Length: 418
Image (cartoon, rainbow, N blue to C red; front, top):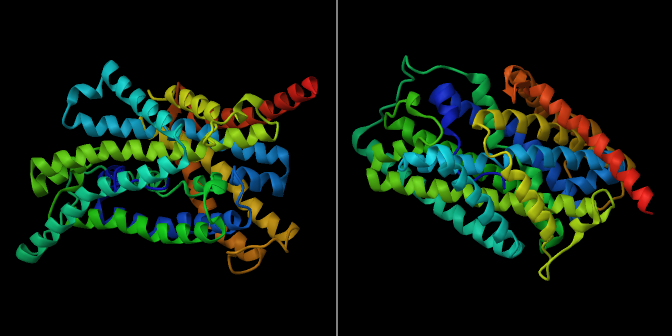
């Protein structure tokens, strides 16, 4: 739910060069991922309810702000979820160029959405086990690349690649892509009631995963840098080229296939978590009651189908534009989640917290400053982006403002039907 592996890091290398990319991958999780993981660890262990961060915000800030947190997260998911079928298409296009354009590319992306939707109808256990297997397969080619790099270094020494004059630096874009690769820690909270021991397992999962993701990102980058592959060769899908230079066509093909499987696996896992939000909101009367319908194995099938259909509508957007809008909307939701953490410390001091972030409310504010500073940068960096001819920030503001309007309409509908 947080990371499917190094796929998606190529643009960071191409925009910043190897040294700066490593610096970003080392610093950003400390300011961005770790505070969010700590927040999720405390609240998920204290309030392990279906709906996760929506439930926290509703309990701390009231129904209106709970709705807004969920609205912003679901709105950002429209753009976030379109990224993974797009990356699948970009990877396969390295071997099958005809899949990168026209109706073939669209059909491929729609197939990813359909497969994940049908898979999620089988239930959380099936998705969880499948995600673990796909993660192992998707990381296997990088383990091979790392071993080849170590062998080459041992026998031929280091050959650190220079950035080269052809590299066009875009540190703002590189930071935005880094933030996107390290976001999503709160997604796992929405399925708390489907986890066997959330009070114990959520804090452990958050903290261990933060360290693992850093290693999974930085080690392959070090490997390709050490054997002399130029940074200017990197853009989305370029891991296949790097694998070909290191290990030949077989390794390159394995990266392409694993990258495709990785996109499906990430989309599949996020479908599991995000579709629980409309269900939880429908349980509270904030969305149509039909979204509460579940299968015998507990899957909110109407919510799964509704979300899958919505995500399919955003498949035509480009990778960079998707990230800009995704960061802005998800970041607004994250601010409300940190505010919920602080408010609950004050209003419910006796709430049992199996995991508790050390310190008082001031310490929580300090911890939350890192994500807020990076979010402010994301807002600044998106100022020139356009979507459908509209400034990206204005577009995100329109989507955010729609939240209170939808909330008012849902309340009006509920009163009229009561």
